[in-house]
Length: 170
Image 1 (tube, rainbow, N blue to C red):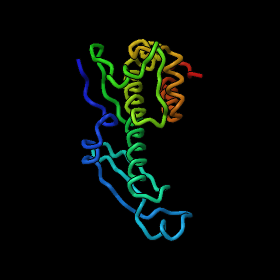
Image 2 (tube, rainbow, N blue to C red):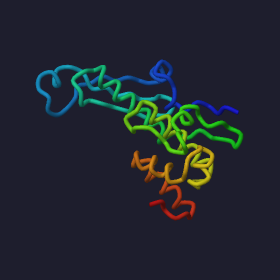
Image 3 (cartoon, rainbow, N blue to C red):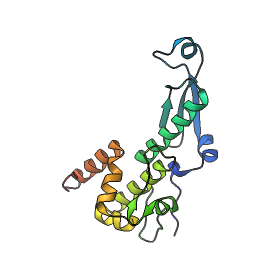
């Protein structure tokens, strides 16, 4: 059974229409171009209230790409999709598992999709990383290393484990 598509995994053509796009001037150093041209981008995902923004580049298009990446990661952290035992693991996740090892760079476009999938299964397994890793087709240590690539995910999982009386992960 296929579960609902996580907003972090939506194609750009589907995700952007769900967003309010604000263009503004970047603050800080950068000279005349930065102070006179609206190159900063803020994307607000209307259904969830989650946002992503970027202003460090001089190009509006480059800032939009970075803001979209940040929005996807923020969506992966903020939105949970309920998984049932008969749900299949996302094909993006399974395509990145090689010999039980997770193969992805945190800067890769698929990182947010994979983060969302991992966090959805971790929550579904009551924050038991071993059970979630088994469902995801990797080892518990690989899942731990993956989560540590996004410090907010790591601290969120540990906070939820603490709420459930489980020891924090190291």
